[in-house]
Amino acid sequence: MNNLTSGISPLISIAFWALGVAVLIFVTLLVGSRLNRKRLLCRAQEQVPTETIADLQAALLDEIKDASANRRTPVDVTPFWSKSKISYPVRSAVIQPLIDARIIQAITPPAENWFTDFASTIWRDFFCLPPTVLVLSDRDWELMVASRMSGKGIVIERLTVKYRTQDTENNIASGGGNVSGVAQAGRDAKVKVGDVKQNNSVNDEAFVRTVVQALRFDADLTSEGSLAARLRTNADLLEQELEEPESEEARQSILDRISGLMTRYGDAMATTIRVLGGMTQN
Image (cartoon, rainbow, N blue to C red; front, side, top):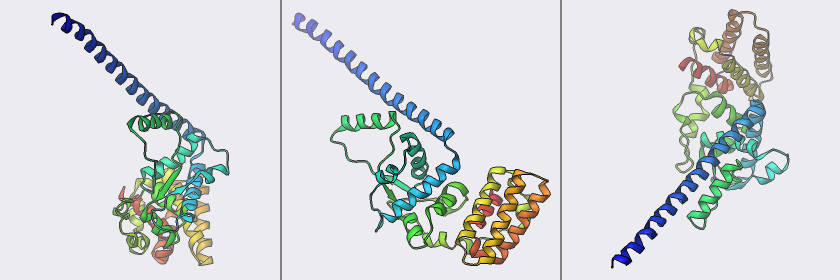
């Protein structure tokens, strides 16, 4: 009996040692692959201008919407990327913010077992491979189909503006919330000129550039030619003031005129209202 016990003990020790080594290898692979993914993503974001990323996001959303005859339609976006020679990390840099904002959801094929699932996760992370099958959220599908909002509009409103509203909660499974509240937000939003004057965001260059984007987006949407011209003119003036700053008063004067236009035209400037409304709430 003593001989049997003494023979089993080394086997148990070897088994525990082998298990410890296996766990260590798995953890090392998992952490290493995720760190490499993060490194590749950061490098892609540094190399590719923000405007280019936003343009690709808008085009991708338009592509998914066009291929989605109904809600929750899985769309293979491989043909979209095949049109250009864009690296996998850049593709991931385009897609990940859309997933984080719950505008789209990635669909991964079911794994045969836990090991193949683990191995595929390691592979995707290490090479920063983007998902190939995506689903547009119910809320954004409704906005793009019923309200005819373009991918550019979704990107500006959901990723660039980042205004404060309950409608930013978006879930594919639950249907994505109340779309009518989003579509009519411009009608109900009120921004006082005094609020804009007192807010420090007037000195925030990134935020003011967002106002420029919103003005141009509203100008593209409006059917009134005179209003579109006025919006583009104010956008150009604001952008020129950013490039060749004169004074804080000059920039504020332009924002005052924009606030006056919002008071007069309301619905036609929904995106600009959301931007400046977010400014006064920050």
